[in-house]
Image 1: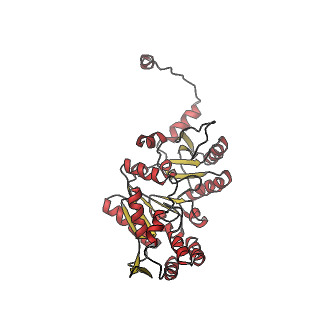
Image 2 (image 1 turned 120 degrees about the horizontal axis):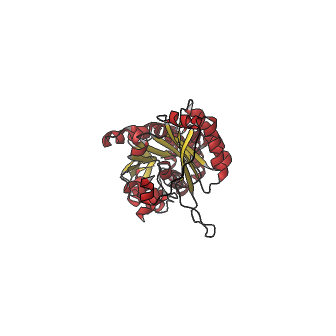
Image 3 (image 1 turned 30 degrees about the horizontal axis):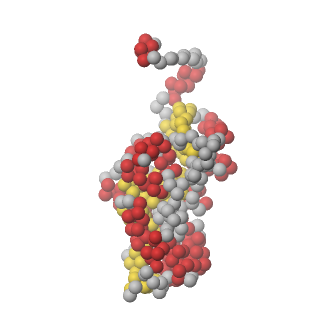
Length: 341
């Protein structure tokens, strides 16, 4: 009391029952978890539905905090986004059931709800790996090339089936490559220069580098475009497929191994080993069926605007806002991000 007086702080004391006190004591040392709610706008309804599930599981909410700045009621936001983080504590029996319930209500509430353990690794992530097509960029490069080769519809149909997991990725890759045979090498730069960068990608990667993370592209696409994005966004590593080119035209073939789902997971593990970090200190972000292996291997796997099969099988997902939503899953507040500007 004297210290509070000295500091000019008003202290208010509220009596609690013995039962409430004992419940609070019993929560000490229990497992801790973080729930992050994301959306263009968040209202009391979304938070209420989340807290209902927490209450049903007899878990304790330690804190609720807003990670994004408040939205103006007058000025229209060019890129609205909101994030609320809840820190909870207690014993969770079936974690998959807990996650499933959040998945169900997220569809109804038009918001993303991510659930993760609040352990030492969550605070010490060091490597973030991205799929390229439909993740870092808002298109499938092979579809863009196919349009220029006059086989757009054929290739798009194969791409969609592969990303949904309906056909084998390697077989689909070979089929699509064959259809590109004879395409001029000169179109590659034209396609690269007009690649639409995903909203929030630059903000995310700039922030990650500022705070000491390494970044990588692990793509079933092509090295030519991966290296273009590497320079544009300052990515540290690129692993992708290499086009075979002879006499200035695409042969319809490729060099080296196909970078499929298994290969992406291998590269993720390889980078973690080379950096001397635990795999739990890694993050993977992707949208297609060929990303599932790396999403499930990483310490935090995030399905980004993903196909239903991928979203249902990933640890976390973001579908309501841009790629910088990843920062809120890491616990960053807008004030931490705004330091860069």
